[in-house]
Length: 320
Image 1 (cartoon, rainbow, N blue to C red):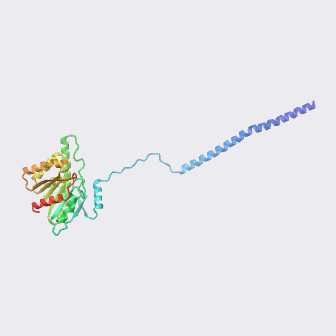
Image 2 (cartoon, rainbow, N blue to C red; image 1 turned 120 degrees about the vertical axis):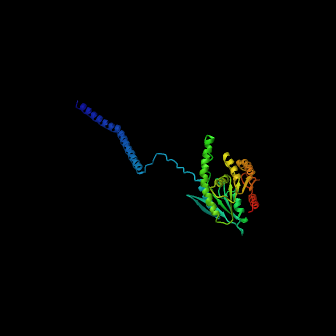
Image 3 (cartoon, one colour; image 1 turned 60 degrees about the vertical axis):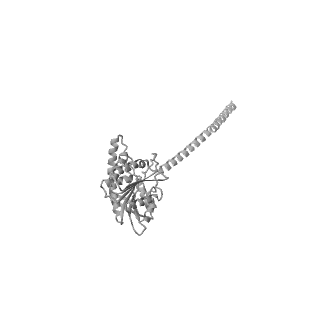
């Protein structure tokens, strides 16, 4: 019996030890896995904290979209003035102050022994001093023939002209108002320009191109400026029918000599209204008026040397 009890006790001890060993081996990997997971979680927390600290140290970036800033275009008149000063730096360029505005003039003095006079050259709207259409060749050809030329960089066409109103009466009223304001402004410029021309000896002849020839004629006929010795109109026209009719009547009523030149290939308004101006001058029996059409190849461009010869020959017929 004693041996049986000893044997049973021995089996119990062995079973107990086996259970402890099996328990240790069974649950050991789970504990290690838990520890490993804990270590990985600690590493992730540490890295996330570092990232958060780094982001906080960086400056805040706005998520709002920035709008592009588009500057207004440069004023065309001011741009032309800058180009004149830059490209015509070898010529005598000076400023003409009229009220608050500043205008540029180019002076080309006579190169002969005797100065016959001064020709004041006025380009068309939006044209520069060195416009190649017509006046550039006069600036080059007239000084060797005894004439001083003073070329104006004129103001541009008034805004909203011609009017785009719905009815004809509204358009006519707006055009009259716009041109009246512009004529008064241009009269002050012309006065200052003629005062500049009076500093030279001889007669003063005005040569105006395109729309400005009509504005100059209107300025003289309104009595805003004293009459010139003579007026030379190059490709004269206005963009509205009433204004073209007004040109014809004023031209016929003028007492000073007028040379009216236009081209075979010219602006259609200049060609269409040339006959009306000539007929009006005939009806009034205007003596010192001549109209000539010149042949040209390029539309709007006066042929080289022909313009100067035509002007000089006409001046000789009236005694200059």
